[in-house]
Image (cartoon, rainbow, N blue to C red; front, side, top):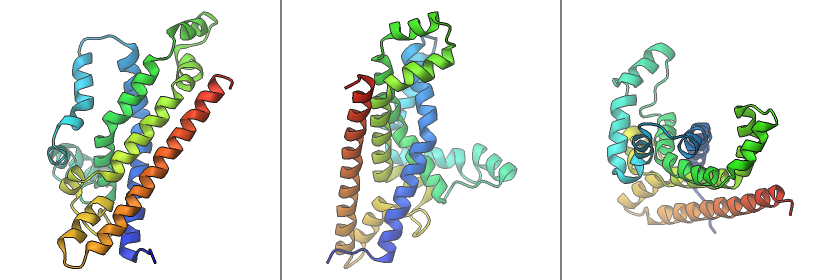
Length: 231
């Protein structure tokens, strides 16, 4: 009978928690930057686009190391957060969420940007001529029409966060019950004698969760598209 041990359940639930938090926190920033890249022309746009997508081409360990330097207890940002607000990210599950959010951010931004670029600007112009403010146009026209891409970006970010390994283990280590996610738990079980069964169970769980996320994303995107087009 297929059943998980308490330690395996802990890794699964922690992974889901980290992936959800990472996606939720990254979403507003992803939408804002995607809109800027899709609708604005300015000096340094190519540099901003490159920085956003840098985690995709950097080795994940390098990204984790940079996070450790910046957000570690002795890092510039990390020391400020710890001293001013008592927030410590390194070797905590919140740090894992940060690492996962950073790694999934490029996928989130790219999907949303492509969706915003596909929105007919004439619809936005028509709303402005009727007296709508730029922010209202964004909320009532651009955002609803870009919804399928937003959903796709969220799922990609969630899936990346769920499977992230290199940046997470470098920044927050592999602490059972605190930072040990599905990926790091599988890695740990593969390193110990007799851990193959536990690793296999977690692999199955990871596949099932990923499939559910992809199927749900497709269903939600189709539903959003149908509602927008009045089907």
